Amino acid sequence: MKGVLKSRGGFTLIEMAIVLVIIGLILGMIMKGKQLIDGAKVKSLIAQRNKIIAAINIFYERYGVYPGDGCTTPAPASISQCNGTKDGIIDTADEEKAFWYLLIHDTHILSEADRRSVFGQDWNIIYRTFNGVTGDWLDLPGGAQMDVRYMCALDQAIDDGEYNSGDVQASAHYHRNTDCWSLSGQTDGWIKVLP
Image (tube, rainbow, N blue to C red; front, side, top):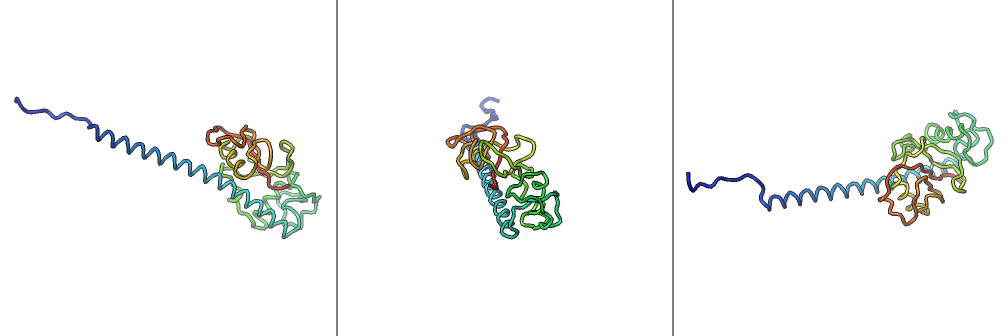
C-alpha cells in the first residue's frame, strides 16, 4: 500500500515538557515539605525544653525544692520521702531517676510523652560541667543520638549558637554563622534546664 503513512510511537516535545514540569513541581513540594518538617522538629525541641523548665518551676513553687533533690530512692512514694541532702542540684543516680518519677508519676505535672525527645528516646537529666558551664542538663543516653542540624538550629534559636558554650552544647562543631541545614551526621548534645 503506497501512500499510507505508518504511525510512530513516542512522545512529542510538548508531552515531554509537561512531564518534566510535573516532576519539577513534585520535587519542589518534597523539598519544601522536608524543610517544614525540620523546622517543626526544632520548634518541638524548644517547646519541650520550655515545658520541662516550667514543670521544674511549678514543682519548686509547690514544694520548695527541685524535683528529685534530696531523694535517696529512684521512686519515692511522695516528695516527703526525699529527706536527703537538698543542695539545689540533681547530682546522684537516685535523684536523677526521682526527678522524672516525681514530675511524671507522683505529681503528674508532666506526662511520659513530655519526656520523649524528637529523636525517639527519653531524655535523662545529668549534672555535669560542659566547657565551664555547670548545671543539670537534658541528655540522651548512648552518645551521639541527635541530628546535628537540629542541635545547631536549636542553639542558634535559643542560645549563643556556639557548640561549646552557653545552655545548649554539642560535641559537633558549629558556630553562630553556620548554615545548620548544610551539616550532616549525629552529635551528642546537652540542654541545660537547671542552674
